[in-house]
Length: 289
Image (cartoon, rainbow, N blue to C red):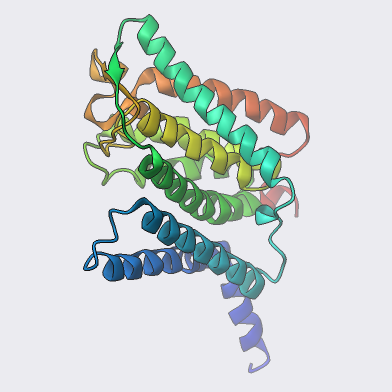
């Protein structure tokens, strides 16, 4: 019996659900800890409003999150994490940045063509804060959702089930955001949850999805000055989005617009076709055993 205990412990430890929980904890806690310590140190000294302080604290938080992920993979999964390998970082991250900017700009172009966006001027503001916000959200959420949740689900349940489940979870993660609605939750799941998971499956690394995520958020908030997942932003451009909620997205932002959903799902279909064509679809465990 004593000989079976280590094997039972290892089976529990290597179980997909156990790994997802441990991975989430080991990624989220270091980031949250660093940001909380930075806030506790900087707020009494008036540093939290400085761009350089925000840059340093966010960068340290992200680095600690990746360190936690590396520790999780080495200790729990006993492997080297190809998904965060720096190989291909610059081309994949750059392509993600370009695609994210194009997708959101294309969404705004369609809204303008249909008479639902009116550009009224420009702001003389810095976009550094919006860039930092987009970076922290992009790197943190991709490391957590695609690096931990989607990757482990795909390994056990296969690509298609993992796509659906992780998209639902990603949508539900935005339920508590300001001005969130049921429509907004579904829209985020369809446009971002599916698209970003597909982007990960295409490369097997986080960089393409992370660049896409960062650019979408930055273009939305830093350039167009529109709410990002319900959070108000000030950007370079000043404009208003009008029309019924299913077109404008309402107070949650353009992410809840049917136009944004259709634009992103078009990109998702294109990427998934490449995944299938390149033979990158992962089969569920019951079809491989």
